[in-house]
Image (cartoon, rainbow, N blue to C red):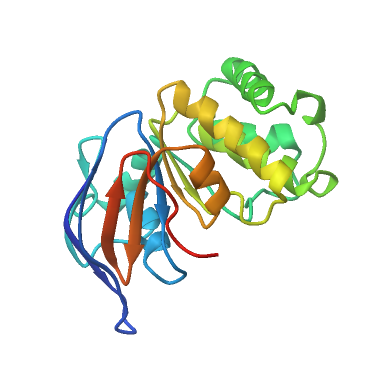
Length: 228
């Protein structure tokens, strides 16, 4: 599903955030990306959905080479990828329902399908009863659930998450992780950058550790491996 071949990323300020990434992630895997702040985790994540372009090397997602993709094809690539951010990125003037429906409207989904799909995904994240509320009427955990629902409404093959529990209390973080587990159990590939040691050590999955722009560890059912 995702392959990086000899990938380098150097920013204009001289920082090398990717120093020879070579990795393969299969369809249906759940992968944690861990490491110290500034290690290159966010760059790893952003290159998968083409928010960042590698300086050198190839990144292939579902058969598409992101290093050579034309700019006007990037929106079509992103229909295959759901992205969940730490800060939710919801549209504050739209209701919960409208935030999620918007992701379907922009790809010109038939109106007759939108309500069914939105209500189905709201059921998955446990928020059907809050469909008409605005984001500022929700808790942080509920806003993250809306963000998650929006990311999977197009049934993407991959969900990318960048510190999705970073702004949440521990109990809410576990609730969000249960939803990620359900998404993964349905066959979606999940790649999650996280600093949450307890989650990584409790809900075991593959762990890719990055330090100073290098992949230093790749373990099946690995541990977090860093001091708090």
